[in-house]
Length: 435
Image (cartoon, rainbow, N blue to C red; front, side, top):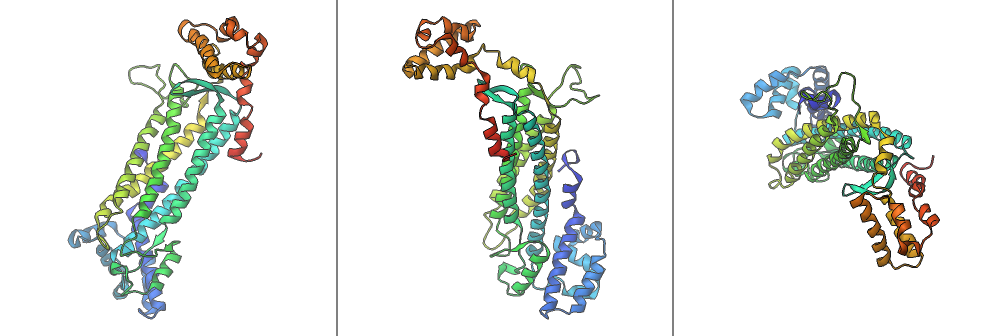
């Protein structure tokens, strides 16, 4: 997590100040529940909230204590005792460190998910706006990077919209799965703390109870969460690469907005490079990379070990902060994307009408020609376009075998671009619903 690729709201979730505040709330809510059960005095629970709730926890002081204790939760509890006084002895009754650490981590991940969901909403809005703007903008569809058949640029964006809508649904589900609470004590048996305490803390922290925590919350939940982030990052890269390809000089059907005063190269003043989408490709690689260690964290020893801890201290902030930045950047790219319909038409015309080859093939079969012969006839004339720069329609009209099956008028009708876009409204309705 570096400032260059960080946004303040997401970064704040992972600050030491936020972490210690969440730790305090978990401990204070647990003490409230213990007070209701008669395990600790209600006056002590009130004092803990009064003094601890108003406190600003001294991160440097906690770090100083931890250098001696070599234990972060004990360091925090020691500092909390300095603030609260004698009643602090009632804090952490029957609890273990994982109760605090795991519950806090899941609170942070749930909050991070809320920001990412909002990011996706912003991206979806930008994609929808631009998709409708270019719903009927004809462009060439490509397979293997080679001209295939006409599509519209709006359909490309509608496809991205549908993909990120699926991403949003997955993230909502992942948030629900990760938002669990464990206050079950050593090895998760509740031997020294009543399950009612866990239920109370879960309710207050906006979580659900973890059915079996074994002292730690099972890491399959976290593996799924980070895997979803990785899939979202892959979708970010997919759209970024599409834009990068479209911005190539030889294509130039769309490009990133180039702002006044922007420089593309330290050596070549003419350059306008797709730096934002190249950056997004790199950031996507990083977010995906965090999903693998999350999966490796699932296999912990017995009821608990801490091999996952160092991993999560890194991937929690880094994956969520990086994806937050990437989604915001991609939204800006889509919103300001410069589209060149005239270049799309120019590229569409590059191959002298070859994009209509399938329609001619089908017309020949419908006129009685075998599929094998129809394919041979169409390909024979198409290769003249590829190799000699001929015009496809002209060559077809001059081919005796083609003329025997199809008239000039029938051939010309097969070169209508509108044929390829007749179901655009149907696809848009599937994606966006009825207007």
